[in-house]
Amino acid sequence: MGTKPKQITDHDCEKIIHDCLWEYSMSNEELLQLAQNGTDQEKFFLFCKILENSQDVLKSLNIFSVDDQKKMLHSYTPPKFKHHFLKKRHSVIKFLLTGEEIDIPELRWNT
Image 1 (cartoon, rainbow, N blue to C red):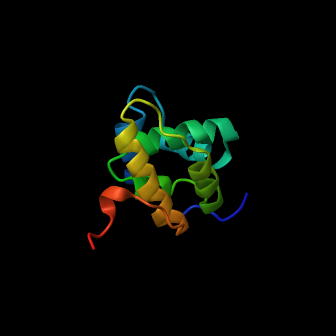
Image 2: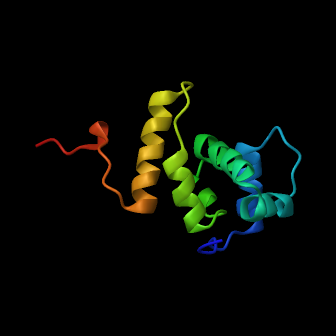
Image 3: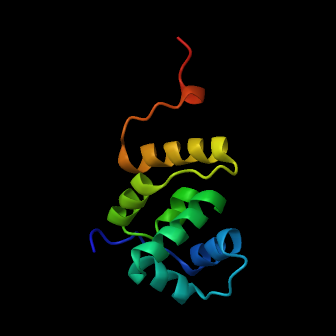
């Protein structure tokens, strides 16, 4: 299963449900169960919802183990809808969570 997820509070779960899963009826316990013990497909669905909709992506992604975060970050392809925004968001999050060097032209220092 890999590295355990960081501590996540009930408030964090409620925020994820509110920001990302508003169209579903889900308890905090069901959310945690899905993130920690769901199938790869279920986890990736949840990951995409968080990456694309959360107001606090870094905190919300802590619902997953570090290994799951990295695996899903490498599998994610930004959709055509809001592509430019989501591509940049994905790149920044990928850099922050993995430390990989990622070129984001808009964030380069002018030299």
